[in-house]
Length: 151
Image 1 (cartoon, rainbow, N blue to C red):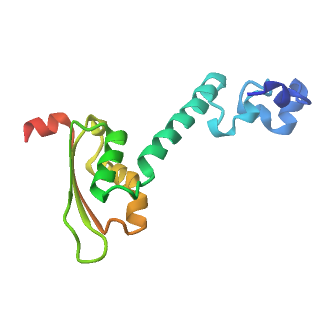
Image 2 (image 1 turned 45 degrees about the vertical axis):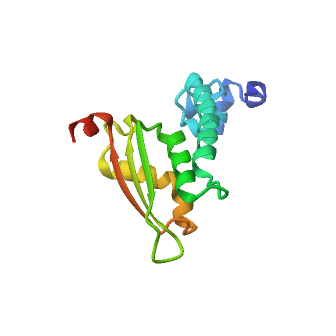
Image 3 (image 1 turned 60 degrees about the vertical axis):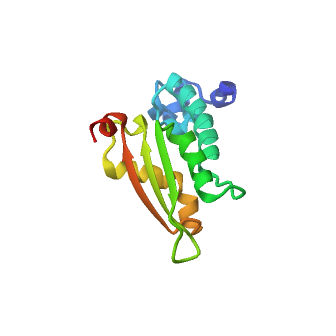
């Protein structure tokens, strides 16, 4: 961050007029961190770094590799995204041009996550495949390690 450019022309008296004063302690630095919602200086720096990690993860998990068979590609991306202890991806073929896929996954990434939210997490990971009709239907069975050991 180049705090010098944010501070120019924004001494203590001008912050309130420019609207930057409401973001933080009025030193003019928080004005440039609009994505942080004024959490504070340190949070802003961490927030910026986590963006790059997330985008790298999203890149690896959300971008389909069309050179692989669909079930191998889904396995690869689900492994990266959820680090499952158990993962089975079954291609049941399909009546249309796109296959029906069944996913059975055991991962502690789903600890304390409601069933519906777990399904949304996996669907988000595979959104491009669903949107482009690479997958016609997706059947999910998702458990944590503790749930799997009980069943």
